[in-house]
Length: 495
Image (tube, rainbow, N blue to C red; front, side, top):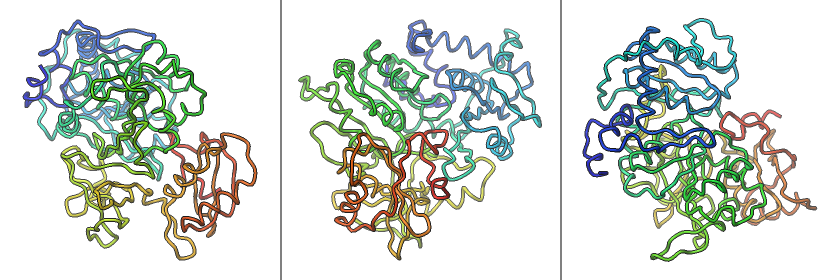
């Protein structure tokens, strides 16, 4: 069955749900909204047809951009399917954006319609209430749209950690390409996804597992208690989330029996921290040479909003030891290079800007051709990450380009320093290091009470050739974060 699906050249991100109806029992429940309801492919198509009928009655046409600004829910996916089925372009906006940032983002995207289920002051374009759309359904949907590979099927957005989010273009081919390349290597028989419904990663994961016919449970609550409850109840073998969710989960004291079903943790986004990975892989089990072995696998995927699939993968088990922000190696269908500031390619063990070339890379930023071109170099897309690779070809992530620090004439990297401290000082749960007035400041969240913290931190810094920290500030990792939970170092630098 999977071979037939992979040979279907018309299948892509814009029509995969409708295509699945040609290959699977459409009545079999595959998607489970935790403690709510279960949905089959037939159910999703029925809802999509009704929504497409309603959107058609409201005047939405092919190639119109429809922005959705919702409280996080599965509605994002249902409207993604419906709008694509009629050739419109869904623009999925994280409901955590403030009204002010939303207005600035919409001014860039210039959508034709806006759908909301929360208060907003936006009034310069047609605004539909999510709960009212269904009432406009006529029962007759417009014809199914036939997508070409380069048709835009979604506008996502970046996290906004460096300013106003940028609108990221996904196409019928690009959003499916990485899924298609990796689908035969996917693991898992029952998946728990805790990804935000508005993010492209959530849709890519849905595509990956639904094309395999794998049952999935979607959890909209991301608090540790809710996750532990869900894992205990449904016993998934795969848990997928952004790094921030796993960080929050690691604050808890676990009963190992609660996680005995888990074989794989899959994170996509930023590189994850060593102590948090070690805690998770100590739980659950995995198979090794056909035998059940204690401890699970943590699949650390490095990616960003500009890529419809991850770029690098590092697989951790209780018996592996590739840490120190090692992101492993790129997928074999991804071409990567490291560039200096003059645009020259660097060799092993030289830190520079990461460039990526693949069919899964975005076409660019919607309505921002200038910024799109500035992110291109020799046919590669610059990710905004600083990395190096070693003599074995393993890559290491050291920082974001916007967060690298020049202090006393020396270039240092905040993520690299943070990883060092976290690996050697177990009483520190999380920290962020920034430069302010030529001093290094560490914002620390403690796991346990301790003494002489700053001198001991500085001893590690000096031992590894880093400048010393001037100040410690104790702060929750939840403070000064963006909509995806990332610490906003640009904000910390101004405190």
